[in-house]
Image 1 (tube, helix red, strand yellow):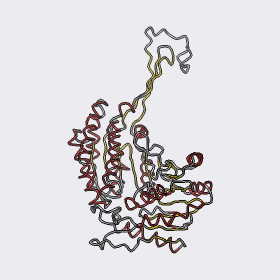
Image 2 (image 1 turned 30 degrees about the horizontal axis):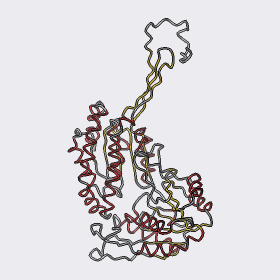
Image 3 (image 1 turned 60 degrees about the horizontal axis):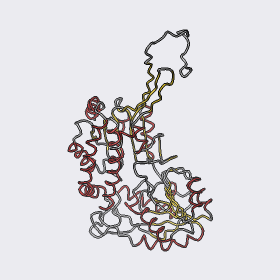
Image 4 (image 1 turned 30 degrees about the vertical axis):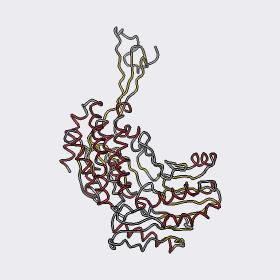
Length: 458
């Protein structure tokens, strides 16, 4: 690991001096290579992580979009200038890279999340050390090999492997200037605290509990399809999965139709073309999901759809949990307070939009939320009053395209600068401001040399 950081530090000395135009040229080639290899990358993800092939391809593609956006860094990185702040004096600023940056990424998106990080870091002139999840490091390694093929110089991207000791190493190393993290709340809080204590910039996306609100005027079939897909896709192992739906008024009568749609989903190996969702990522993950389902039932939740006992032929010992719905869930239940991270959807009921908003705002997390309605004023009220960083209106998973930024809020983020988009440029650069005086005569001032200079007075 020391070699990786030292190599990145040495590479930074030359890479940071490469013109911004020449830094993005290999990114253009890299985008072509990622697109050309998307099926091989997706297969690697499915073999290691378990998600179905179509979802794995989506994993790669959403990361590819950030790579493509990194090509626009020459425009995004522009500074500011004010001419004649005083006679013959100009002030201007520009953005400079930080140095060696690091990324610590989760198991659930082994392509997308790394690609959120190092393309923008490299385009802005930094070098990067990536620590992928030890559960599925194969795809990040393949992506790194494509970097070499794209023409990036040696040392600008290194990969280290390991668990907590590797995390601590990156948090403590004096040459690592910034750390990006996506993962669970416990780990994120730890990394943010340890990294910032060592003087590093840290951006950390943490846990979530994403709610959807269903209004009586919503399009029923679109809403049900959206809820089922967003709750159970990728076996619920998404930080933006819809894990709670709040039915307003008579929409609770839609629950049987939602159950029927969820029940029709096919659970199987991710390599099976007919599969809608694959297994959970590990036995430990399955045990935890089952435990939280059990706790919900013990605390009084109904279970109109029970996927705990699913058996997939040929994979009888697999880590499968079928779509599960817990009904009449209350905010004090453990299944509501914890991020389940599995194919489990909780249902709640509210008498009004105001009551639904209050439920969501009382939850400490703020990653994403959605409302389904055909009423413009209701949608406007929701987006204005909801205290969540990313809002979907008739969109179940409102992850923005990379010309915007991923703006989770409250307990779902630590650090105050978000991922990708313009905010990524802010995170991976520092501003330098220059004030210059090119007075052709430099006439001696009558003002005492001991008086603080006042610009803009002439």
